[in-house]
Amino acid sequence: MSTSPVQSVTSAPVSARDERAGRTRRYLVMMGIRTLCFVAAFVTDGWVRWTCVALAVLLPYVAVVLANTVRHPGAPLPQTVAVNHRRQLDAG
Image 1 (spheres, rainbow, N blue to C red):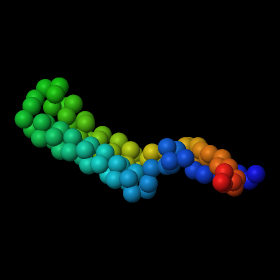
Image 2 (cartoon, rainbow, N blue to C red):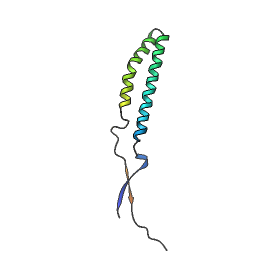
Image 3 (cartoon, helix red, strand yellow):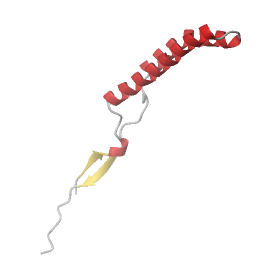
Image 4 (cartoon, rainbow, N blue to C red):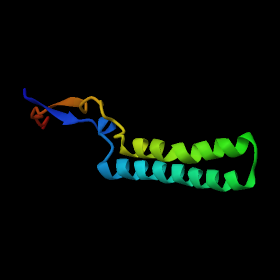
């Protein structure tokens, strides 16, 4: 009886394309929020203005760090399932 490991579909890692698309989407959302902070800094005053200015200054750093972070850096290797390659005998 020989068994060979087969990768389980549920443990397959996310494809590189999907991971990159997710990181790009997060980056663009954060840059959109930064743009809104710039606009809000011009139309508000007081502590709200300074909060918007601070966010507009800090968000690019956070966005770049998150965009460059790989989603599963310490993910375990994909799990395998043992498959039994036995010959089945015909009953007839």
